[in-house]
Amino acid sequence: MTTKYGIHQPISMEKPTEWHKKLTEQLEKLLVSKDNFETRERSALREDVLGRLNSIIQQWAYDVSIEDGIPEEIATQQKARILTFGSYRLGVHGPSSDIDTCCVVPRHITTEHFFRKLVPLLQQEEDVKELVPVEDAFVPVIKFVYATVDIDLSFCQLALNTIPDDWNPLDDRNLQGLGKKSQKSLNGPRDTDSLLTLVPKPDTFRLVLRFIKMWAQNRAVYSNVFGYFGGIAWAICSAQVCQWYPNAAPGYVLCKFFLVLNHWKWPSPIRLTNPDRIRELKFEVWDPLRNKKDLAPIITPSYPPMNSTFNVNKSTLAVLKKELMRGEKISSRLMNENLGTEDILKIWEELMEKRNFFLEHRDYLQVKLSGPEDEDEFNKYYGFVQSKMRQLVLSLEPPYMFGVQCTPYPKAMEHPDQKCVKSFFLGLDFKADGEQKGEGASKGKRKQVDIRSAITYFKGIIEKYNGEGGFKCEFKHVTATKLPEWVFPDEKRPAPSKKRKRRKKSSVPAIDKAAIKNKDANKDGNKDANTENSLEKRKDAGVGDSSQKIEEGIKITKVEASDEVRKEKKQKLETKIDDKATINSNDK
Image 1: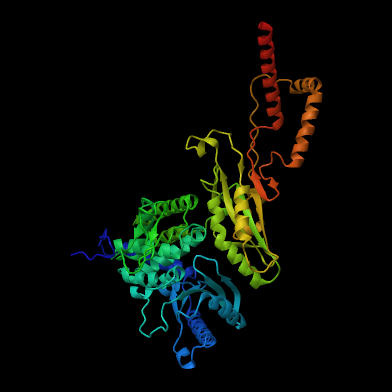
Image 2 (image 1 turned 90 degrees about the vertical axis):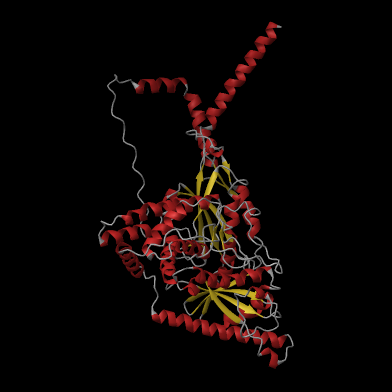
């Protein structure tokens, strides 16, 4: 009988062939060359940092208990727990990866204590840098760097007076009495541990996921905040393919990964298991009938099941589909068993190539953040704005905005030689009238698109920031040719396209263009002069310029013809109407 993993039967039980092993060898070689595995010294440093962090949190929990009037004997027993999850818990972290941690505490310790008491303790540590508390996020978190190790620390308040030694986060009964945000925080460790129990071969899963994470980051499709797939979503997708090919080598599973995901029929959900509904726990559970607006649902494995990709929108899904199609096209070449070792490695490298986001669009919206040169305060502001960027992307999509497609770049760019200045970039693609209605595009017909309403809406959101003042968020439309040099880190800005070559002279007898030009000039000299002056004035005012900036926002226009031509047509039409009216009047 075939062993079943998850809710689906395996597609193939085939064992690794020599060719598949060869693909895997070159895959591992590539990952090693890209420094995807950290050293023993770095691993030891992470363990030391976690130990020091645990000491700080235990002291903090004890101090809060004493302040609340709890006797010292009981306070020493009311310890907190630190649970790791994400890439570190899965064993797929790299040298620069962060450590996702969840601080689990008894019921008398609140989020107020977490942000008002623990944050100052962390700030006193000499090795703690870049500390950013994010209170308004979907899951409240404290971000910081501890002795060069990035830490994301979330918070979970249990409905228990003390946490027993045998407390198990995977036990569904421990969800009883949790608040919504605490439940979402605790599901981080619960989902991670569940994943490892649902894959047939953890080592195969880890190698596949290592490649997919690096590939997604290089192709700029790794960010839950900006509407792409986050770490848990890519992990679930990798685990799904591992379930369907339980005996396959990692190199072969990767090829099948792109094949499966490229042909997946969204919005059909990807899910590894169907956890039983627990009546006693009244948490919201993802339901395909109730959540019809989800475009690419990837469901978490533990209870309560949730959609890990609820931020995905039409624009980001289009980018994801494009990248998965590219991945299948390249990886399918690895099925040619006549390839040499170097050819295999080159194909893996080609698949991993970084995406040239800043060469893909003609127009960009730059969101520039700046403020006083206080890195801690600036990082707080930056973290707040970053957590809200999804709202700006959504406001540039139907039904709020038509005629433009917005593609976000999931990383903030630091300004060189400028302290406390960062910029986000969104690629903007403007559609013709026909494209907006689902019809064929009419060449040259571009509708005016005003994105000021989206910018005004987003400004209203970030103005709610309750931290220190003095910060600025500026919006600027930038054409591809005006992008700053520092957005091209690996290569210089591409040279501008060459001018079109002149057409060859026709065999038709030449026309005396100079004579015609002089004749027209004498005939319409005054008219041309007036038109030229009018156009110059309009140019100075910014009319007709596709990159014009309008006070509080930006208005992008695609101009079909000059206003003077339109005015002339309008005057002719009015003259015809007047003439016709005169004739009718005379007839009467």
